[in-house]
Amino acid sequence: VLSEPFLAAWTARYGATPDLPLDAILSPVLEQQLQHRSVRAYSARPLPPGTLTQLIAAAQSASTSSNLQTWSVVAVADAERRARLAQLAGNQPHVRGAPLCLVWLADLSRIAAAATVNAARAEGLEFLESLLLGVIDAALAAQNAVVALEAMGMSCVYIGGIRNHSDQVATELALPPRVFPVFGLCVGYADPTRPAAVKPRLSQSAVLHQEQYQTEQQAAPVAAYDGLLAGFYASQRMPPARWSEQCVDRVRTPEALHGREKLVAALQQLGFALR
Ligand SMILES: Cc1cc2nc3c(=O)[nH]c(=O)nc-3n(C[C@H](O)[C@H](O)[C@H](O)COP(=O)(O)O)c2cc1C
Image 1 (cartoon, helix red, strand yellow):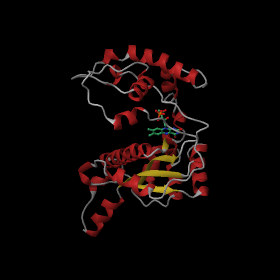
Image 2: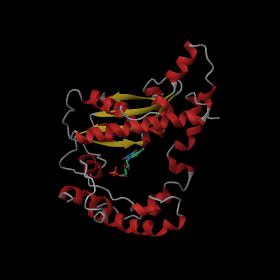
Image 3: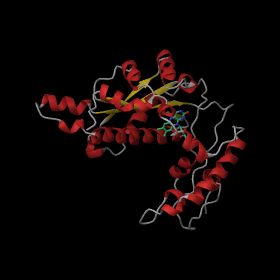
Image 4: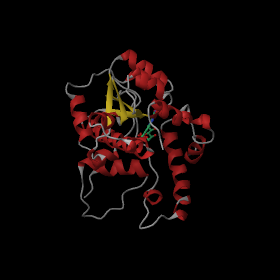
């Protein structure tokens, strides 16, 4: 029998109850994941001692391409540095408000150093594939930390705005060549007076394809999701908006990328050749 919290979380996620067999395996981890919500308002409560060490253990327990471990993270607790990062990330107040900002890095510098020590060529580092490898590793590590911190009662929000001015973020964090800040992650305790809600997602029929991609499968669930999310925005007293229009707005012009349209040049400056 599906538990009440599981059913409630599923319904919040999909706007519908789950279509699961009676003998489906239940998992407290899945129940917690269904309750994920980004938090942008934090209380002044500090993080418990040992938190960072535990989160990094979670992150390092993620799979990593060929065990290369091509990621690192900078933990920024200093309020003034967080304020500067907040500004660089599009003036996002939660970067100031959360006690900790983790900046996750695609880090090819360790491999480059190993090649130098071994007087070896490292031409592979110049290819887009190597950057992608680091970005994937960083994302998997970060999301493992997210699952762990939410299990510990903390909350977070990713900060893609960190890529608006990658060069200045790299300077602020003293990043060596071949290290790219992929995104930030604000971590803290949610402000109980300004709670965040579980945001619905597309139905599974939009994202799950059986055996081969079904192009014609896309239109109906997107239309349904526009309606579901409109209801969510209304319930949160947020301005009305259509999701599919928001998606289009996000890609309409280069300027809509808020500085990230210059990412290729920024990456080249950071030491990525991108062949
Ligand atoms: C890589 C990444 C970058 C993000 N960047 C930002 C950001 O800069 N600012 C922000 O407020 N939220 C950011 N978010 C949070 C998303 O807006 C959020 O995950 C999405 O709206 C779904 O909401 P939920 O996390 O509450 O389910 C980012 C999320 C991801 C995965």
